[in-house]
Amino acid sequence: MKNNFQKTWFLTKFHLRKDWLALTIWIISLAALMGAVALKFEAIYGTKAQIATIKSTLNTPAMQALLGTFKGSIKTTSDVFANEMLLFMAIAMAAMNIYFAVRGSRGEEDDGLTELIASHAVGKMADFSSVVLELLTANIILTVLYGFGIQFSTMPGVDGQGSWLIAIALGMVGMLFGSIALLMSQLADNSRGATAYSYGVFGIMYIARMYTDIRHPSQTWWVPLGWIEKISAFQSNDWWPVTCLLALVFVVLLVALQVNQNRDIGSGVIPTRPGRKQATWALRGPSSLVFILQKNSILIWTFGLFVLGQHMVLFLIQ
Image: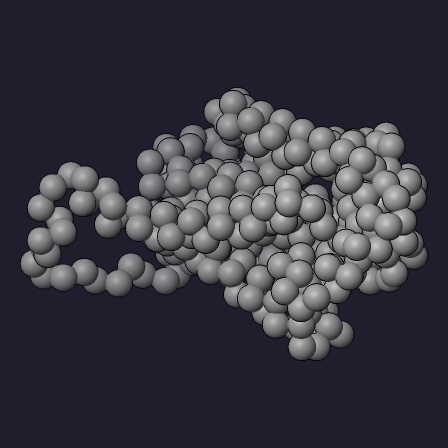
């Protein structure tokens, strides 16, 4: 069993060295966003009148669909922060982890790096495990930065347990979608397909969460993306949703690892659908070819940026 993980740490350092710039940009951007919003929230929602105004807005069906429902009453600035920022940052964490999970697994297979690594004296599970450790490292760093950023903000109602509950919950959401992306990377036979499947799962969860939050809030427990809404940060501080996320991450990673060990390098469980026998007019030039190859990613990122943009507009106009 030990030989199965031979050179895991070496490959982990390789992934971190290869992705250090992209990881640094993602980590600094997300941590700075969380910290800046936490510092500014007291000025925006520092009085009872301001909290009462936003409370009525957050209780509308449109805002519940966009931001989710909040378990508990909204009395302090920190309650508003937890309501508005949890789902927003969860979406950003999902995007980051899907990107690095697909890039480090199926992306490297497409480039031939995985086959090259496997030809050396490395364990069967080493390459897969190294990608998991890279995701874990990035999420731990962000969790620590989130926790300190929220805890040392000046928002009324902030406490240490609630701050770290939010931080750890976001880290677990990131690991969840990273593990889902790793599973999709085993099912698809190319990185574009893995990305599309990963965001497809995310999209289904997001839409299901919207529906249950509006129609049947108690059924949001059936949607893993909605679990983060149930933590009740700065109030009862419920750690049960975080435990559920941890258990689900463990299960998904085990399934992904099992599939990884039972397929050939470069192959996927779901084969690519055969294309046309003759190329269409859209493939007459290099630009159109690039567009056809990247159209799924373009649509996915357009949808994701639209959702994130809606959250930012809501925050800026309040």
